[in-house]
Length: 289
Ligand code: AMP
Ligand code: MN
Ligand code: MN
Ligand code: MN
Image (cartoon, rainbow, N blue to C red; front, side):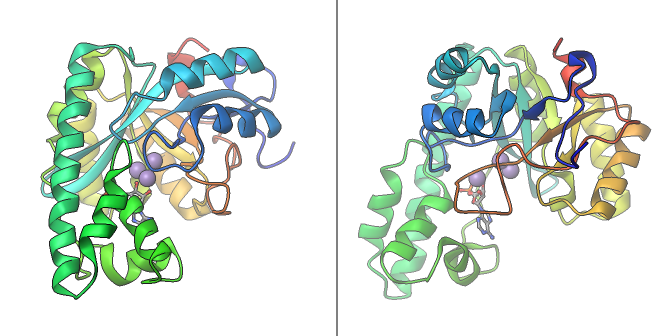
């Protein structure tokens, strides 16, 4: 079996699954239907679309998946604050028309627009044509730092979006402005009321000590959290082992995904990541798949 082949528990056969992806409805580059085409080309059989603070792409992705015979899980990735840190929680199998979730996404859209304007003020103070850059980023349905980074790269202020983050937009860099994200409790409630399963996204990427991660997972579990991303594209073996231990300790199911954003980024390849460790209960079983 290839290291990229997913055993999916209840589904039996070695199916490729990807439960963390982005489309152009947030900061991905592919429209939902094009994302599904790529998933089909890579033989992904079970796909979740989890755009940042948006459910706008779910209907189109669902339709494209049914045409392609791919099973679809409607999802979302919500940004939130826990103890002054930014965390991401993925909601799987959410109801895309849930009124509370839609209101949450609308409010986050306003917060993101206001934040980008403030980042524009920072860039203006560096002598950059901030109005043009911000206007380009605000064209996006969910304006993120990625869109501002793309505008900076397109304007010749960085050689790539990655470099735009490193020079201007990452925390501590001169264009960065922190966002007042909603609290962890609020986003957990939002996902659960929309019928979703809450999965803590990429736990290895937060700069948290082992003790802080345990405190976070205790709280996450108490708030009804169900899963942890145990196998994600680009995750090292030691990260996977650490997260695997935490999933067992807190009795959380394991989720898997690429966090795919665009075909040009080889470190987040759609549908390609190490298989879930055998000791971990797959979240697909909780999804009834
Ligand atoms: P935002 O939610 O507006 O803060 O934008 C965050 C998005 O920017 C994330 O979802 C990532 O896709 C992307 N991102 C964050 N940090 C970096 C980085 N250092 N390099 C490239 N992309 C990044
Ligand atoms: Mn992103
Ligand atoms: Mn994330
Ligand atoms: Mn993501």
